[in-house]
Image (cartoon, rainbow, N blue to C red; front, side):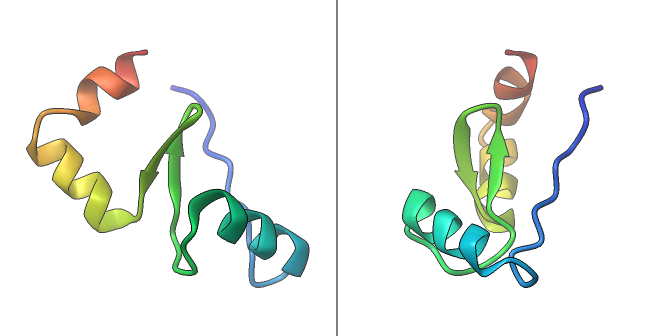
Length: 59
């Protein structure tokens, strides 16, 4: 299993701005798998229910 990188945007305003620029969102978590932006938890859950999470993790 690969390591999970957690970026604590509440402690680093520059990283918060970077996240908002990349995702267009202000909420956390914002989940990336590799270079693919999945979205937040609800998006991750919906992707899993639709059968799209396992193929993305297998890449």
